[in-house]
Length: 563
Image 1 (cartoon, rainbow, N blue to C red):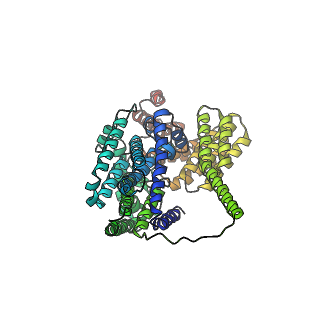
Image 2: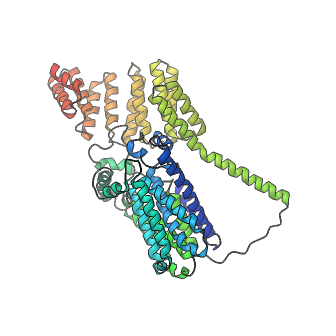
Image 3: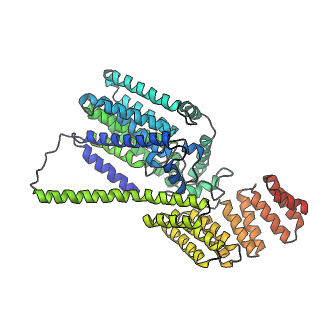
């Protein structure tokens, strides 16, 4: 469905841009939208740090907690700095091309210069290095495609460079903890997120070799990544799920095989080849500059994708840029207008209906954000142990958007907490029902099963044996999707221990050690289990290994000394 939507966007923009009169307004509409987003990003950076509304909402909706790095980057209405950067990086080549094309009255130059400054500065405040590289490549390609005309527009280049330098200076000496120079220098260092990407890429290569032709299947990366993941990755419930290779070529090679990667590359090369070949036919028309900018925008996104991944909040703009370029290449003289003789009352009624539909769609489009705001507040209240208030917020979020599984998961966790603390079976049953609803909405998400199992374990500790059996069942369903979640094996062992099935508990904790040989929790639990079986030697050995793995686990040292 997502891909079909992208194709519809491409076809729609292509059809509009084929008319010489309309392809320029399309480009200006894209630029105008980017200006609005850039203004939001700048206001966010200078007046709402370090408590960014969108950062808190986005992170609460399943992406961890806002940290210093994330709250030091502009996110605007995208809720993610990387996605915002990718979007702004695609718009910049269009702004540059429109500036050159404005010699033929595409738009007032002062407005385009203002747009260039705002969008470029906001892009820098995202500190998105992949998008920086993409924007630079896109602008360079835009100029290269029209290099014969650059000298004639040298004054435009001079003003644009001065505005860019002003933006860099503003970002470099802002009060934030990150600078342009520091981020540029970090591009060539193999540490931090760079090291993380390198590790993901290295782990992806064996996966390509396993299924070279057709791959593991679309969107299966997170299920096959565990086989070759670096040690220590994706072991705990709060670890980020690695469902993307952060390199589009590797992602496609792993999931759709070399056949899928070949098709993808063919599409890109064919688009670029056809575009460059047709640029000559547009040289005497300002459409040539807009086409060059659209191709530059597409390249910007492709470069960005080699360090990140495609996301539905950004990808539509790639297809819009591609449709704009394709439409300009096929542009003809304005189509002959067709006059319709419509009476004034009918015209008023039609316009009113269009306005009502448009307003309804606008209101409807804000509902996910409204729901996320309610959900974020619920998470905040949950962290403060104000469970009744958090419950009301989660229910409100579900009332606005009932199709988001994570709302139901958090609702279920809160209900189980309330049911356990108040010994209220009604809450517990409602919590289980909420988890079941989350499973129905997304049965292929292992986190639904893992978080259900973890919540049921807390509720089952006080002798509710049926809940403990469900803990085991839920975690096993999650492990069938993602077999490297160490916490799930440990929880299964704990559930067996509460059920007095010590041998099964030992088996689960040994399975955990197969994945994480230095797991202090698994070793400590094994020490307890061997002690229950009267095997003091193995118990001492397990306690010692737990303490050696984690010197802060003093209970393991105490247990070892006691034996």
